[in-house]
Image 1 (spheres, rainbow, N blue to C red):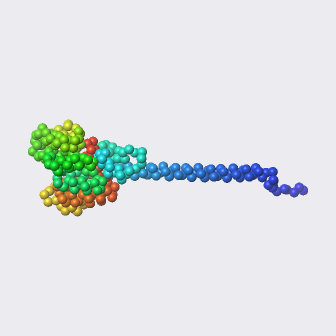
Image 2: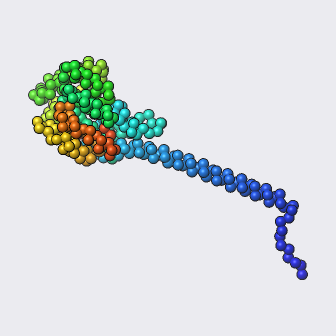
Image 3: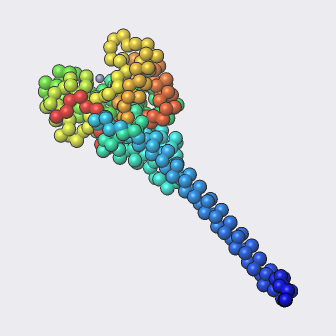
Length: 309
Ligand SMILES: [Zn+2]
């Protein structure tokens, strides 16, 4: 009987075996390196996507409820820009928010338009200093004040990226009875502001004294036919009366109001009312910590309007 021979590694097979081992090793190393490279790339892509999502979500998630809210100029962007300062490729990180403010598709976004009516006053600079401190932008619905301080304030409002808006020259309700005289009053302020600031174009953002419901269809049509946009408000500071509430109450009222909207337009007279002025830092600090953006108004955004025609 022949004895079964167990296979043995023969000397002549050794080189082939070694070659096979080395090749396998190289293959394993290459596969490992490829996997590692692939994973690194995926992590990079994931991080980029996350950044983009964060950027747009802080602004994009707004609700559709606000009938018309419009916002943000390039400058206001400064406020958000720093915050969302995303990746390099996006020239305007606020582009998406702005586009949604124009279309009214604002579901989930967190935008606040602080509006200050009836100034400038001797306290406007104080208010501007505060806004600068928080890198927040606002909209100033000014009337005509022909004095050196006011002139300097019209300029400062523009220079610092806020919106210089029109609230008529005289704030005279009786002009609503005469649309022509009303428009002349609007134009007088418009020309005055352009002369003071050197701007050739105004913001074309308007607010009717007392709000649009205090006006009438003829005056609203007159404003729209001139290519202006107008905004009322959906959050009030409650400072319109002669004895406004204390600052903490005003702040709470504004904060609660803004939390109910994707896009808020806050009515205040902070240049004139001390308690509103004192409430503003509380409002801004609280809402900024919750992801709200404080943007300047622009002509082509959709804003809350109480009287539509
Ligand atoms: Zn007013």
